[in-house]
Structure formats: structure tokens, C-alpha cells
Amino acid sequence: MDLGISDKVAVVTGASKGIGAATVIGLAAEGAKVACCARGGDALEQLQKDAAGLPGSVRTWQCDLTVADELDRFFGEVQSSLGAVDILVNNLGASPSRNFLYMSADDWQDGLTTNLLVAVRGTQLVLPSMRKNKWGRVIMVSSGAAKYPSAPLIDYAAAKAALLAVTKSLARKYGSDQILVNAVLPGLIRTDMWERTAAEIAESTGASAEDVFGERGARVPLGRFGTSQEVADVIVYLASGRAGYVNGALVDVDGGLGDGV
Image (cartoon, rainbow, N blue to C red; front, side, top):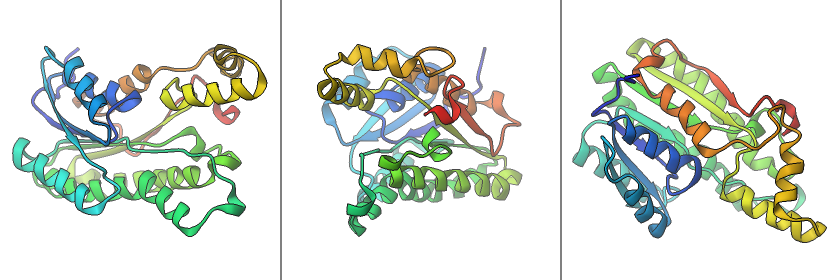
């Protein structure tokens, strides 16, 4: 199936591993010219190798988008070297475990910057050209925690919930410019973050990491954790020409788990 994004310019943030990396590969496989960034140089180098031979292209930038100057520089360099951005996947995120009573103002600011404000600023930078070209796709990578928050992820969940409001607002505002803004809400996905979490739980309980994945995965109606590829497949569809009447959607990619997260 031709998804209609060959030669489209796509940006994926937080792209070195997991959902971001899988999305980069998925877009490049459809012929898109993909620009991506992350802080980890080694992971970006591996991503470039993984993308070799695909119909599209992948260019990487090593930068920290939570630093305003680096964010502006990244988007500026992408647009000057590849052209106007057609597709933006706001994937950057981090979910450290917090204790609300001991969180500082800086903790809150860091969480909101990483999980909300980077996406807001990046979207502001690409919308003008999308409006001019009367075509655009913005996909926010939120989280099931946005709807079903847990206490240790309070700032993460708050930021990801705000991202859903931004999604709905922008979809209403810019739909007439043929810019489609949607969000995906991953549930239990076996990423590096969950690998670390499972190892920590296993160490404290005496179980194995695989036991942790098995026990948590059994709570999902499908009986398992999802994969980064399964989330990326949804993102690539939403970025495509085939999703021409999908706007303002909040798409759960959680195997039916819902509030069991």
C-alpha cells in the first residue's frame, strides 16, 4: 500500500531508540526524508546504519531539545537543508519516578519542558510552512498515563495529559489548512525504559526480569507487552496520505489495557 509520503520531509524527536527509532525506520521505509535528533551519539550512529538501503533517507542531529537554542538550531538546520517540514512526530519524553512531596520547582519545570514544551515549540516552528503548503501532519506521542496516571509519574502524566489538550486545540484550529494533528497513547511497551524498570523490580523482589514482564503483561487483554514497532506502525499511518480524514484523534495503542496501566 502506497502511503503517499515519498519525498515528504519528516522530523522525529527523541529518536535514538525505542518508539522514536522504529518510527524513523518506518517513515524512511515509505520513502520519506527523515531528520531526527537525540542526545546519544552512538545510538544515532546505529540508527543511521539500520536505515541504510531504505527508499527514503535519514539524517541525524545530536542535540538536547530541552535547551531552547539547540531546539531552534535543529529545526532551522533541518528546514534549510531538507526544506519545509511536512511531518512532525513529537516523540521526546522521559518518565522518572517522583515523590510529589519532595519534588522541587525545577523538577516540575524539567518534566514539563521535556514532555510538553519541546513539542509545543517544535510545532510552532513547522506550522507556518505547513499552512503555506496546505498539507501537514503532527503526531504527538503521549501516554496511557495521560488518562490513567500513577502517583510516581505525576509530572509526566500531567504533561502528557496537557499534550492531549494541545492536540485537540491544534486540530480544530488548523484543520482548515489541511494540517492533521493527532496523538498516540502507548500503554505497556517493551522499551529500554521498561527493561530498566523490570530489572529494578526484579532486584528488589528476587524475581527475574522476564517474570516481571510476564506478570505485568498478563494484565493486558492481549496477554503481553507491546513493541515499539507496533506503536510506530500507527504513527506512520497517521503521518500518511491515507489518514486524510483523521484529525484530533487520541489513539490508544495499549492492547486494550486501559486503566490497568
